Image (cartoon, rainbow, N blue to C red; front, side, top):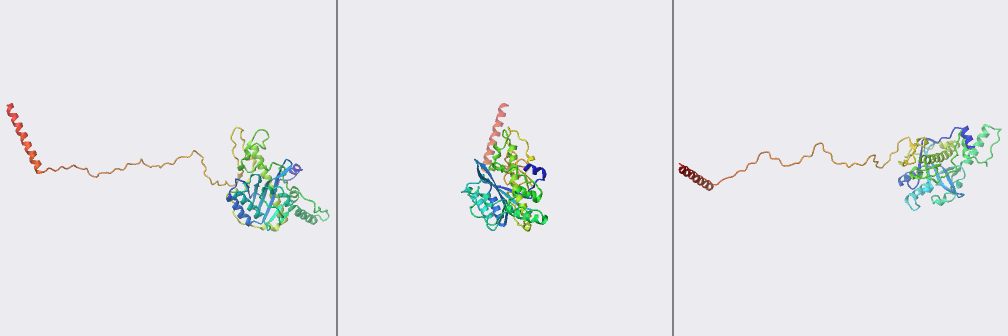
Length: 355
C-alpha cells in the first residue's frame, strides 16, 4: 500500500520554517531552560512517539513534541530516551520539568491515537508521570467527525464512514490534502541514537556489508525526516479541523543552540573510504550556526611582541666631553722647578766633560 500511494500522490512536506532540537545527555542546561521558557508561553502541542521491539517487547525510544506557537513557525523536540542523562542529574530534572509544563492540564495535547497508548512504553524512564492526562485530543476521532460532516455537505447521498472507524494518519493525509505520507520507516531501530552528536553512527548498525559511514548517517537522516513528518502531519490536520486556532501567535526567541530551517539532505553526504577516519557530516542549515567554542584551523602559534625597529639599548649620553683637571700647589711647583734646575746643571756638566 505504501508504494502504491507513493506512485499516486505527491509527497507530504514538513514545513521549512521548523526548528528541530534533540534532547539527550549531551544537551546543555541552557538549551533546556530556554525550552522551559518557551513552554510556559505555548499552549498547543502535537505529540508522537516511536518504540522499538526487542525480544518481542516494545520499548519506548523516541518522543516527538512540536511546540505550536503559530501556523507558520514551530519548534520540534526529539527526546532520545535511550540517551537520557542520569536520573540524579540536574539535566535530567530540567528535562522532566520541561515535560511536566508541556503536559499541564490547561495545554492542548494533540496525538494521532489514544494518548495513553502513545506513552505506555515510556513510564519506566522516570520522565513522565502516570495518570489521566487532561485536554488530550485524539485526532483520529476528530478527523472522523470532520470527514463525516464534510461528506454529508459535499455528497449528501454518499454514506458516511462510521464514527468508530479509526483513520490512519496516512489515509487522513491522503484524503485531506491529496498527499503521500511515507510510512516506510515505521518499524525501525529507534534506539540507535539519531543525533550525530551522539556518535552512534560510528558503529556498524545499518550498513549492509562492511561499516559505511554514509549508510549509517543516511539511515538516521531518513528516520529523523520520518519522525518530523509524522508529527507535523498531525499538526497540519489539526489546523484544518480547527481553523480558528491558526491565528495563534506566541512570541519568544528560538534557542541560541538550535539551528533553524533544518534541511536534511542525503545528497550532502560524500563518499568516505573505509580506511579514512569518518568525518562528522551534520544536517545542512540555511544559516550557518554559530559555534561558541574556539576553533584552531592551524597549529596554534605563540604570539610574541613585535617591534617596528630593533630594540635600542638605552645608555646615558654625555652632551659634552669630560676633562680631567689636576691642580698643583705652590710648594709642589717649587719642588718641580728645583728638580728641573738640577737636571739642567747636570746636563751642562756632562757637555763640558765631553769637550
